[in-house]
Amino acid sequence: MSSATPHPDTPRVRRLPLAGVLRLGRPSDIWFKPALSVVVAVAPPNLTLLALGRLDLAMYTMAGSLCALYAHNRPYAARARALAWVVLGMVAGLAAGLVAASLTGSAVVLVTVGALVAAAQKTLCDATRIGPPGHVVLTFISSASLFAPQALAQVPGHLALALATGAWAWLVGMAPGLFRPHGPERRATARALDAAAAYAENPRSRASGTAHAAVQAAWQTLLSAGARSGTRRALERLVVRAEVALAAPADADPDRLRAWARELRGTAPVPQAPDDDELLGVEIELAAPAHPVWRMLAPIAVRTALGCALAGYASLALGVGRPYWALVTAASLYQANVTLTWSRGVQRVVGNLVGVLVFAAVVPLAHLGPAALVLCCLAFNFGAEALIARNYWLGSVCVTPMALLITEFAGHQEPGRLITERVMDTLVGALVGFVAAVAVTNRRAGDRVEQSLAAVERAREDTARLLTEPHPAPGALDSARRALATALVDLRATVEAASGEWWQRALPQERVVRAEQAGHRTLAATIRQRRTEGVRP
Image (cartoon, rainbow, N blue to C red; front, side, top):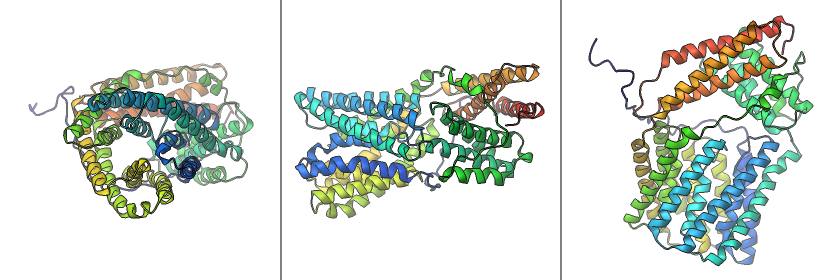
């Protein structure tokens, strides 16, 4: 055998991609909801401050208002809890920044505090899977507050402003539930049906992974939706129909699946799938404990703390007046692996550089008066959320001028200096942040693949055992089937994350393929058995 043959445990460096990094995707089917929500959450407090002549307080009110960006895909019962925790997390990060700013003027100490807070925010957001925009908005607010002139006696009042506007953002986020109380569940189910229809039309395409992930996302949404109402049970039966299409695509009717999806996206009642099924296994899953993920987040937390600190220190060494911009740039990069972090870095740099050009074009208009400044910020708030789903860099084109204009709330700034400092901090933060991602090796990514493989194999064995039992416990097979589907989706996500990690030993690709094939065969067998028993979902 040639000596060039790689050993399975030999670390490999993966090539960093450029093609497709800036490609625009399709907009989210609810792109307008976070865009409108953030405008409604930000406008009243800022216009009130404008009327009072106190725009210098806008940073504190925006801290709470920006919480309206979160949890738009969650059912309202889960959204209420998630938004409450986001508001508390935002206020806690702001408190840490303001207290630190009031106690010390050392820029090095402040950058260190900002890096540690950013790492904590990144870890908590990933562990709770809060979803977009993740930790970046929290880190932007907490880091900016570190360099805001502050006296300790002012902190309670400023936190009260953030808490009050956070409560307003909570109301804004929950308000659509008055009109479409099951909107998030309906959308998630519609996506699962559409994905299953696409797979049924072309089972040999790459739509399989997307379809299984969409079905699993629909189940997660339904399981977090609270009480099992009649509407929710009808949605559960439709998700099972999507599962049937994945298990037996030749027998599926894609047109029927898409027709159901269209009805769900409209205002019509939830369509009733044929053959009622009690879905007793759902109750078992509701009682199942959550799986901890903290151990796997340690490398990401270390990367974030180290990268943010070094980026801030480098910015200070260059004499930039706002080192928190470099810190936030570094914090925004960190994704599941080095390859994705690289892609986000390219998107961030391109978006910020284009964004400063937009700022240069808009700043004369913003300088016409405080009202013009507030309206420009609102427009960029809307644009950022409307565009960021297409690609991160496109949203950054609006985020960058918005962040620069926010500095004008406290007083007029010289545009040339702002632009220069922002460009420098973007480049420094992206470069140093990526170097930190490469330096902190995530060797646990391979361990996580092994753990996910073991979970799939256990889930498949449990499901196969239930298939051989003549009379399994009520709901047990349903629960086992969904547990196996969850494990398969988690395995695919884990493998994709590990595949983009540097200095990683070769992954057990053949074992992964065998486990996925066996798992999907077992899932199909559960559908066939339900049919032979006359309990067709």
